[in-house]
Structures are given as structure tokens and as C-alpha cells.
Amino acid sequence: MNHQKIFSTTLLILALLAAPKPCEGGSILTATVLAQTEPNPPAQGPPPENAVLLSPDDMARFLGGMPLPKDSPLAPLTNERAWQAHSAFFEDAFAKLVQGKLAKFHLWQNASLPESKEPVPVAYYMFSGPDFLFVDQFFPSAAVYIMCGKEEIGPAPDPLRIVDLAGALQNLENAMRSALTTTYFITQDMKVDLHEQQLNGVLPILYVFLARADKTIREVTFVTLDRDGAAHVSARGRGGTPGVRIDYIDNRSGREQTVFYFTTDISDGGIASNPAFMKFCDRYGIGVSFLKSSSYLMFEQGFARVRNFILDHSKIIAQDDSGIPLAYFNPDKWNLRLFGTYVGPIELFKKYYQPKLQELYETTNPPEFGIGFGYQWDFRKSNLMVAERNAVSTKVETSGASGDAAPKRRSWISRLWPH
Image (cartoon, rainbow, N blue to C red; front, side, top):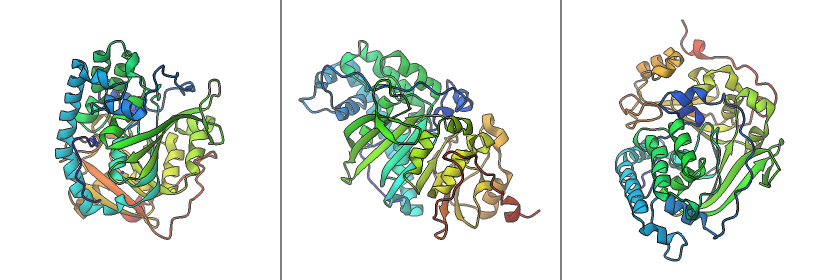
């Protein structure tokens, strides 16, 4: 939570990845519930300087198993059997995605949601983890993408310093395997594998997604946010909310774009103790929002502030049923469009079943979505809601998402379906 494009096999894995720490775990089900309950990680300092100056774009292409310039310091490593096997793995995985799921997605996008390709100033993807590729495909023309999760960023990858290159590359594949084969990350896989072989945090995964999405990385800047939400270049001892800014060029359009990722806790308690991230987001105003495999966290009152922020700062919200509950979309402000089929949550989240959403699906008979999405990787069971704000309701409302306590919102379900 478009138009037709021909994507090279080097494109990406929109494989409906998913949730921030919430949706990743040793099993589909472990990390999702742990999502925002862990303590805030310590602020991350800037990465150590490389003895050899490595281009972040070269690093991204290397990790993504893609050809490198002949004069790249990493080029000799591409002759090693381990890298060639790694390249073959990703070539095969992404080719299947591009020719299968992504091709179907873009057919649907062109026919049903072409407006999602229009330029927007910002796309918010709360609870994203490193799932850049999917939000990029859904809203490809955003000037800025703002993502967050509980996963740490990690230092800039440096393949020249990795002792066991074969092991590191294999662990990167393992960390991404669930996203490539289902529709979301499994946190435990990513957490264990990437911490074992000198490829730490989400940055290696972001690099792979950017490279495979046919982007050229221009600059990578490690930043921290002060309590007022202002971003500063990371410096040792500075503290603050850790983040990374990646400036890149979309090679197909020539568009210059930016993606931010921050490690932060966006539960109500987390925002109360450290409002920096929400204040940073508030500076970007109204844009679009995407939500997928977000562990149904915003069904709980402990996530009211981020829920209200999304409602107040979005003109379009594209989500599966794990995002914002149907009851919070005021029909005086939102037009809702449904796609696919609603069969209820998977077993782990069955308590978040929405009877009124089921009723709405049954009475309106929505058109097909056609691809697996979020926790429902079977396309016959997946659902998508697109909420578009009415033109008269584009002013940012004060919900307290940036600091004050979030006010309660009245449910409108009873008005929509009177008993």
C-alpha cells in the first residue's frame, strides 16, 4: 500500500518483501510479534574509512551479482568461483521475479492504478525494514523515500576486507531468500546470517535492491537525527537516531532520487521517548504511504501515533490488511478501492480478523489483484486496499504523531454498515 514497464532481469525483487523487524523472524512468525518491543539500539557512528576508496555503486553491483567496470577495485573478485555462483543465484532469482510476479504486477498497475506513477514529493514506508524495491515499484516517481525499522543499518560493506567471501555472499543470499521466494523478509534469517559474515545490517540488502532496480548510487551519507528531527552527518560520539541517506539516479528515467532509512522505535512509547524520526518525517509534509506485512501493529493502541501520522500525511495509502484497520478510514475523507480477496490474517495474526472488511469484499466483489502480497503469498488469497484522500481533505491534521499524545479517532464502521 500504474503503467507498464519492461524491466530487465536486473530489475528487482518486488517480491513483496516486507515489514520492518516486525515481519522477519526465524520462522515466518517469530520476529513479527517482536517487532517494536525491543529496546532502542545504540546510535551508530559513521563507518570506518576504507583503505581503498570504493564506489558505493560498485559495492552495490558486486553484492547484487552484477557486472562491474573493469577498473573497479572489486573487478578481480568477480573472477572467483564464489562470486560467480552468487551472481548466478541472483540472476536466476530476479529473472523469475521479473518474468513472473513483477510482470503481472505491472499489468495490474497500468490498468488499475496508473496514478501511482505520478511524481510525489515523498513516499513514507513505515515498518519497511530494507524493502526498498517494492515501494520503488509501487511509487516509482517519489523524490524522497523515507523508510524505517528496528534493524540496524550496519557499516558500508567492504568486500575487500571479507576473509570468507563465499560464506558472506551465501549468507546474504540466505538473508534475502524469504523475500525472493515469498513476499517478505524473515527477520531472524536476516539477523543471524548478516551478523555472521562481515555484512552487517540492512545496508547490504538495500544496496542489492538498488542495483537490481537499475539505479546508480551517487552518494551514501550516514546521518543522525537530533531530537528536533534535524539530520546531521554522523560523527563519533554525536548520538541521536541513526540513519543513512542514499542519493541515486534511476537509470531508466534519469530521475535523481533519495532514500532514507532510520533505525528507530515508532511505537507510542518509542516516539514519546525519542520523537526525532516523526519530527523528521513531519518536515516532508503530505505524500503517499505504503504498508505491507506490518504485523498488524497499528491495530493496537500502542501504535496510534504513527497510524495517525500516516492518515494525516498521505494523499494515497496502499496497503494490505495488516496496515491500518478499515475502521480508521473516515468515508468523509477517503475513497477506498479494494483488490484481490480477503480471507483473513494468517494463523499467527488471526485475532486481527476484520468482519466488516470481509463483508465489504463480499458485497462489492473487487477486481483481482493477481499476485501474492504481504503475508498472503498465494495470489488467490492476497488483498490490497488503496485509500485516496478526497481533494477537499489535503490539509495536514494535527494528530500528535510528532510528540503530543495521539487523540482517539471515532470508528465509522457502524455508520457504513448499520446493524
